[in-house]
Length: 455
Image 1 (cartoon, one colour):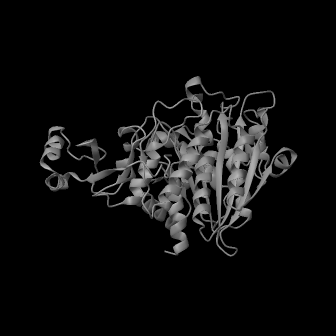
Image 2 (cartoon, rainbow, N blue to C red):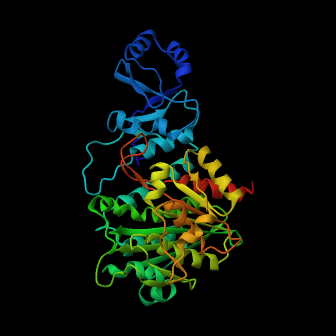
């Protein structure tokens, strides 16, 4: 993020916004020389298009094109399209200040821990009333930092400690469970991490915005690196597996948003931090694992490990009888085949809750897309040697059958949403630099704000 508190002696320049339909009116308000320059430059005010405005001292400002529908992405390219370290304020035509601030700061983000930045982004003087937009951007950028961290820097212990630190900074309580306690209480998750010399850790975060507020459970898959286990991934499939803890990062972003906004709810956040590695201690195909719920799961494929982590977390969450359980995971390639990288697949056993999240996701431009929990495929998880298998017997509908597996660990009547997401930008776009992405975090936060209103 850029620094919202720049030196007071630096003069800021205006960044104006204009829709294509209003370009002629905007040009008529400029002096003749500036208007002629802008026309000659070919500026058409298409969304995200930016042009500098000349002045007697060199640079007088800039203008950016925006669409009729408010979007943070219209402003996402500005920090690196404008001169390095220049200072700007929002000028005329900016009708949605929150989206402008959010898009600016999301676009200014770069992962720089192991690479010196090529240049500094332009800076924005944050207008009053933009506190929530800044908060959302900061939480998302913190999640991006976690996802972008190499697995050598961020193992299960480090991810669990980052989660605990977040809770403690905001007045919450944190417990980290590992070793024998994890093996006894969360045996399926422990089995996933057994092959790694870096032991699995479960971070349990509790926070109370109000003592009598509704309890919301957030469960995140935190596989810090996924080799596939003994069913080893090919090198191309393993390349980005540092991001396999993206679900955990998303849930930590949501938790940070809730805590910083001081919503009058209670949080139970469960981060299952493991590494799926290869060794003599790794789980094997056709092993039968015990789960916290007591169900026995046959390992049909060791690379379907995320659901083995989440099933114990879902059971633990359900024992607390929350108002709703939300989980997020980089769970299946099948979801990406169906929906591509930008649309997280959403599954829910509650139609009202699902429709609300779909609607809110569209409103805040952080969309999800619902896929069905199709009962007809549930039998595909049957196993002759255990209560169920962790993979389907059919090579189809992989995202659906993964969600059906998780549903086995959610009690009837318990409101639940499962998000199967990518957590990554394959290439840099305005506001979305290449690398880790906290997909659906803003939508989930808006859902919780909306639930609090009782609407």
